[in-house]
Image (cartoon, rainbow, N blue to C red; front, side):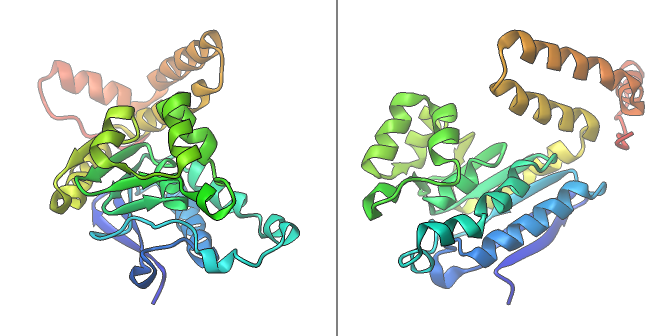
Length: 256
């Protein structure tokens, strides 16, 4: 059975689900490779408008597979080039919603932070415990976490390796919302369907500008926003959306 499953949840909504329940969805090389393949394909598929990333109802992902790294050397780790696999997720132009139940630890926390929206269950927890096994995060944990929650909260997580419960993660900015554990998957689908019904070009431009603007000066980021805003006036969806608003009817967005 595949360690990563691809499913269609609704029109325009795809789900990528990690499927290693026997290992609490730990991220081995095969999982990373399959995630990269799926996200590359989904990013290029015009029928897909939003992606739900999950590990199912029990675990999101309990970190990297330690057994696959314990005896590895530095050159071996370099040659694995795992950063290229992670890059396929980071570069996905479609909005990604992480549906997090249970553990999002280590690589699992880093994976969740690749998403654009995080829906967490009440019993979910986020953690960067790498320091406890003699290493540090290596897939964006020090950088994305700091950008999400600020230096002082990030340092606490990174230097202690202690888990953060869902409600605390929400308060610090590491989750978008927290719902009952049994409602996580349904809520993620609900949000994905809302996004999938909106104009795809505008959605993609919003994601691109937000991410690019994070590492730019305010002046440069505002310029990117302004140009993207102007560009959308060349789209049929802009005409459809505004005319539908004036005509008091529901718009039908086609992504052109």
